[in-house]
Length: 130
Image 1 (cartoon, rainbow, N blue to C red):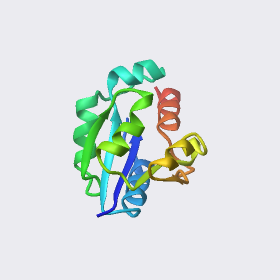
Image 2 (cartoon, helix red, strand yellow):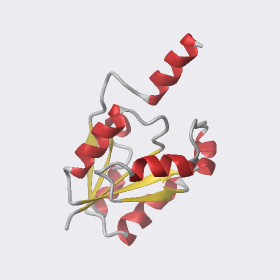
Image 3 (tube, rainbow, N blue to C red):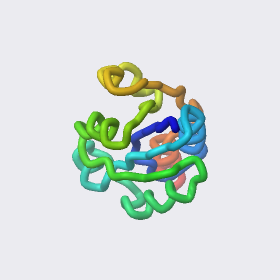
């Protein structure tokens, strides 16, 4: 069985997220999503609309996702890859080159983002409406 892992905040879930998760799952048989915790998002300077528990429930309801684990810091990726016996690390192309160091532990794949949608875009558009 080929195991795949991806990381993200997945706030304000939209079809770009679904596209990423579907394509990540196509890279293997079992997809693990490491979901950024509220505390980690604060460190990253991100403010989420939904808290961790609600974002986790949403991800667990998606058929492509087999397991959701917490992402608590920048340095856990290598440990997760070893612990969960990951074959492929998959992430959006906006991170191109940033995780190449993980090639020592598994294949690293950068997937093109869905260009016309992002959580930031949604938040900005909502700000214009309100």
